[in-house]
Every structure is written in structure tokens, then in C-alpha cells.
Length: 226
Image 1 (tube, rainbow, N blue to C red):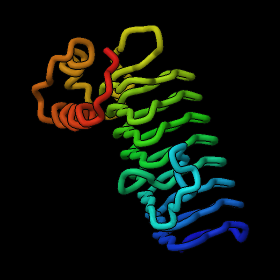
Image 2: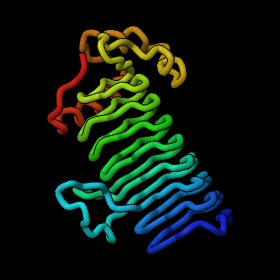
Image 3: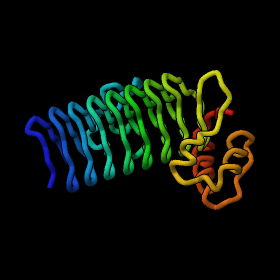
């Protein structure tokens, strides 16, 4: 059973799982699929057309958004439909804090944290466990690697390696907090060598992370912070 406030507007093909709570004055526009146990709103807009300067009044009526389960999407968040790729998608256990902008064609993998007023550019991929600091901006087409963190108010215009900390004006460093939080302590040395020196890890657990990122990094044709 879902708990939906009477002021919520639901339009078009919107599919809800179970146990969701949709708070006042939120707008959900399909095609939109939402999983289970999500908290959304108040005054959040999910399903508006992507903001595209090439065609600002384009028809997005058939463009889908998929949101997984156990997410928190707070007040005044905007999540927009795709323009150029197949989908805008949020995974599971994602926490999007108030006033954040999730654009057209964005992919947010599981356990991503987007803190207040962060702005993500279109066609970006924010990988598992990444944390976007307050008020930061992510350039279009960017890839933010797994378990990395982007500093408060930072403007990230290149891709960011997994397990790294991006602070403008400083060299990339190791996100030791995420290593501990997500249970990678046994691999701390090889993670450090990868982040600081580009040395490929040997363990399967870490290699699976870096290979996923490296594939997306290569496809993005963007530079990377070192």
C-alpha cells in the first residue's frame, strides 16, 4: 500500500510499487516506474522534459524514467526525462537531498548521495556509492566513479576515478572514508596505488569496480582528474 498525499499530481503512465510515501504537492509524470519503499517530496517534480537548448519545447511524452527502491528524494528536487539516450534512471538506496537537479539521461547507480543544491549535467553517470557535495556542479557527459566524493561547491569538468576525492586546486586523493564504509579496507593499498598512480588493482573485487568505471570513462571521451 502506498501513502499518497491528496495534493499530489499523477499524470500519464505512472507505475508505483508498494510502501511508497509521496508527500504534498509533488508532481509525477509518466512514463515513470517507481519501485518500493521510496520517500518522495514534498514539492518534487519527477518526469518533466529534459532541459535541452537544441530543442527546448521537445515532446518527451514517451520518454521514460525508472526509479528503484528504498530511495529518499527530498523537497524541491527535479528529475527529468531523457532526451538522447533510452532512460533517466535511479537505482536503489539513493539519497537525493533538497533542491538537487537530476537531468535528462542521467544514471545514478545504487547508494549514490546527492547533497543539497547539487547540479548534475545531462547524460552524466554517477556510479555506485559516489557522493556529490553541497552545491557542486557536474559537467555534461561526466562519469563520477564509484565511492568517490566531489567537494562542496566544486565544479567538476572532468571524470573522477573510483575511491577518489576531488577538491578543486588539489591533487586527487584517496577517499578513505568510503573504503571503510563500504568494506574495502583489505584492499586499501591497491586502491591507493590505483587512485594516485593509475596502477590497475589485482583483486577481483576492486578490479570489477575499476573496469566498470574505465569502460564508461573511455566511452565518454572526456578527460580525467589525476
